[in-house]
Image 1 (cartoon, one colour):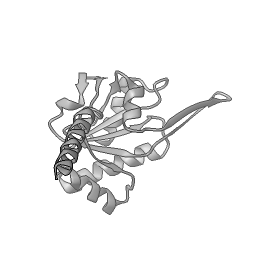
Image 2 (tube, rainbow, N blue to C red):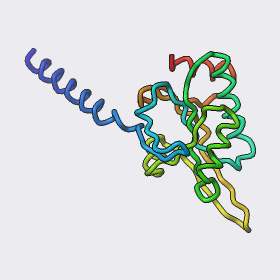
Image 3 (cartoon, helix red, strand yellow):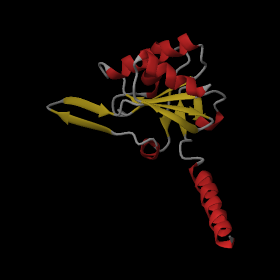
Length: 169
Protein backbone atom coordinates (compact mmCIF):
# COMPACT_ATOMS: atom_id res chain seq x y z
CA UNK A 1 0.00 0.00 0.00
CA UNK A 2 2.84 2.34 0.87
CA UNK A 3 4.46 1.75 -2.55
CA UNK A 4 1.18 2.58 -4.29
CA UNK A 5 0.89 5.85 -2.38
CA UNK A 6 4.49 6.78 -3.21
CA UNK A 7 3.93 6.01 -6.91
CA UNK A 8 0.72 8.01 -6.90
CA UNK A 9 2.47 10.94 -5.23
CA UNK A 10 5.33 10.86 -7.79
CA UNK A 11 2.86 10.66 -10.65
CA UNK A 12 1.03 13.74 -9.37
CA UNK A 13 4.32 15.65 -9.05
CA UNK A 14 5.29 14.79 -12.65
CA UNK A 15 1.85 15.71 -13.97
CA UNK A 16 1.94 19.03 -12.14
CA UNK A 17 5.45 19.76 -13.33
CA UNK A 18 4.46 18.97 -16.91
CA UNK A 19 1.50 21.34 -16.70
CA UNK A 20 3.70 24.14 -15.33
CA UNK A 21 6.41 23.63 -17.95
CA UNK A 22 3.89 23.53 -20.81
CA UNK A 23 1.83 26.47 -19.55
CA UNK A 24 3.62 29.10 -21.62
CA UNK A 25 4.44 26.97 -24.64
CA UNK A 26 1.95 28.68 -26.94
CA UNK A 27 2.23 32.22 -25.58
CA UNK A 28 4.31 34.76 -27.48
CA UNK A 29 4.80 38.48 -27.90
CA UNK A 30 5.02 40.24 -31.22
CA UNK A 31 4.94 43.49 -33.13
CA UNK A 32 1.73 44.66 -34.78
CA UNK A 33 0.70 47.82 -36.59
CA UNK A 34 -1.02 48.81 -33.32
CA UNK A 35 2.15 48.33 -31.25
CA UNK A 36 3.16 45.50 -28.97
CA UNK A 37 1.03 42.37 -29.01
CA UNK A 38 0.96 39.54 -26.48
CA UNK A 39 -1.24 36.50 -26.83
CA UNK A 40 -1.58 36.37 -23.05
CA UNK A 41 -3.27 39.79 -23.03
CA UNK A 42 -6.13 38.74 -25.30
CA UNK A 43 -9.49 38.71 -23.55
CA UNK A 44 -11.11 36.38 -26.06
CA UNK A 45 -10.27 33.15 -27.90
CA UNK A 46 -7.74 33.31 -30.71
CA UNK A 47 -7.49 31.64 -34.09
CA UNK A 48 -3.89 31.62 -35.22
CA UNK A 49 -3.02 31.06 -38.87
CA UNK A 50 0.40 31.00 -40.53
CA UNK A 51 0.34 31.94 -44.22
CA UNK A 52 1.45 34.65 -46.63
CA UNK A 53 -0.21 37.45 -48.56
CA UNK A 54 0.72 36.24 -52.05
CA UNK A 55 -0.91 32.87 -51.47
CA UNK A 56 -3.19 32.17 -54.43
CA UNK A 57 -5.64 29.77 -52.80
CA UNK A 58 -5.29 28.18 -49.36
CA UNK A 59 -4.69 31.33 -47.28
CA UNK A 60 -7.55 33.42 -48.66
CA UNK A 61 -9.92 30.45 -48.58
CA UNK A 62 -9.01 29.66 -44.97
CA UNK A 63 -9.45 33.25 -43.77
CA UNK A 64 -12.75 33.54 -45.66
CA UNK A 65 -14.10 30.31 -44.16
CA UNK A 66 -13.00 31.30 -40.64
CA UNK A 67 -14.74 34.66 -40.93
CA UNK A 68 -17.98 33.11 -42.17
CA UNK A 69 -18.01 30.39 -39.53
CA UNK A 70 -17.40 32.92 -36.73
CA UNK A 71 -20.24 35.08 -38.02
CA UNK A 72 -22.63 32.14 -38.38
CA UNK A 73 -21.84 30.93 -34.85
CA UNK A 74 -21.92 34.42 -33.37
CA UNK A 75 -18.54 33.66 -31.81
CA UNK A 76 -16.16 36.44 -30.81
CA UNK A 77 -12.61 35.26 -31.51
CA UNK A 78 -9.48 37.10 -32.62
CA UNK A 79 -8.04 36.00 -35.97
CA UNK A 80 -4.27 36.35 -35.82
CA UNK A 81 -2.35 36.05 -39.08
CA UNK A 82 1.40 35.42 -39.09
CA UNK A 83 3.32 35.58 -42.35
CA UNK A 84 5.88 32.91 -43.12
CA UNK A 85 7.14 35.06 -46.03
CA UNK A 86 9.01 37.82 -44.18
CA UNK A 87 10.98 38.78 -47.27
CA UNK A 88 7.92 39.93 -49.21
CA UNK A 89 5.27 40.62 -46.55
CA UNK A 90 5.59 43.86 -44.65
CA UNK A 91 3.71 44.06 -41.37
CA UNK A 92 1.43 46.78 -42.76
CA UNK A 93 0.60 44.85 -45.95
CA UNK A 94 0.04 41.67 -43.94
CA UNK A 95 -2.32 43.47 -41.57
CA UNK A 96 -4.31 44.99 -44.45
CA UNK A 97 -4.54 41.53 -46.03
CA UNK A 98 -5.91 39.99 -42.81
CA UNK A 99 -8.42 42.83 -42.37
CA UNK A 100 -9.71 42.21 -45.89
CA UNK A 101 -11.24 39.00 -44.52
CA UNK A 102 -12.30 40.22 -41.06
CA UNK A 103 -12.23 43.83 -39.90
CA UNK A 104 -10.72 43.07 -36.49
CA UNK A 105 -8.17 40.50 -37.72
CA UNK A 106 -4.57 41.32 -36.96
CA UNK A 107 -1.23 40.42 -38.44
CA UNK A 108 1.66 40.08 -36.02
CA UNK A 109 5.41 39.49 -36.26
CA UNK A 110 6.56 37.31 -33.36
CA UNK A 111 9.81 38.49 -31.79
CA UNK A 112 11.22 34.99 -32.18
CA UNK A 113 9.42 33.62 -35.22
CA UNK A 114 11.33 30.32 -35.36
CA UNK A 115 10.55 29.55 -31.71
CA UNK A 116 6.85 30.30 -32.22
CA UNK A 117 6.71 28.24 -35.42
CA UNK A 118 8.36 25.34 -33.61
CA UNK A 119 5.96 25.57 -30.64
CA UNK A 120 3.01 25.22 -33.03
CA UNK A 121 4.82 22.65 -35.17
CA UNK A 122 4.40 24.84 -38.26
CA UNK A 123 6.14 23.57 -41.37
CA UNK A 124 7.07 25.95 -44.16
CA UNK A 125 9.53 26.18 -47.00
CA UNK A 126 10.43 29.12 -49.22
CA UNK A 127 12.27 28.47 -52.47
CA UNK A 128 13.47 30.79 -55.18
CA UNK A 129 13.97 29.34 -58.63
CA UNK A 130 14.58 31.36 -61.80
CA UNK A 131 13.38 34.54 -60.07
CA UNK A 132 10.15 32.88 -58.94
CA UNK A 133 9.44 32.45 -55.25
CA UNK A 134 7.34 29.54 -54.08
CA UNK A 135 6.08 29.11 -50.53
CA UNK A 136 4.73 25.95 -48.98
CA UNK A 137 3.30 25.91 -45.45
CA UNK A 138 1.15 23.99 -43.01
CA UNK A 139 -2.55 24.74 -43.64
CA UNK A 140 -3.72 24.42 -40.02
CA UNK A 141 -5.60 26.86 -37.80
CA UNK A 142 -4.66 26.85 -34.12
CA UNK A 143 -7.56 27.60 -31.78
CA UNK A 144 -6.50 28.96 -28.40
CA UNK A 145 -8.18 30.14 -25.24
CA UNK A 146 -6.18 31.79 -22.47
CA UNK A 147 -2.92 30.84 -24.27
CA UNK A 148 -3.90 27.16 -24.10
CA UNK A 149 -4.17 25.25 -27.36
CA UNK A 150 -7.74 23.96 -27.55
CA UNK A 151 -7.61 22.32 -30.95
CA UNK A 152 -5.75 22.25 -34.24
CA UNK A 153 -8.24 22.70 -37.05
CA UNK A 154 -7.35 20.64 -40.08
CA UNK A 155 -10.73 20.18 -41.74
CA UNK A 156 -12.27 23.40 -43.05
CA UNK A 157 -15.49 21.84 -44.31
CA UNK A 158 -18.35 23.93 -42.90
CA UNK A 159 -19.73 21.41 -40.40
CA UNK A 160 -16.31 20.26 -39.19
CA UNK A 161 -15.02 23.82 -38.86
CA UNK A 162 -18.03 24.91 -36.83
CA UNK A 163 -17.73 21.85 -34.59
CA UNK A 164 -14.09 22.73 -33.86
CA UNK A 165 -14.82 26.41 -33.29
CA UNK A 166 -17.55 25.57 -30.77
CA UNK A 167 -14.82 24.12 -28.55
CA UNK A 168 -13.84 27.73 -27.84
CA UNK A 169 -17.12 28.55 -26.07
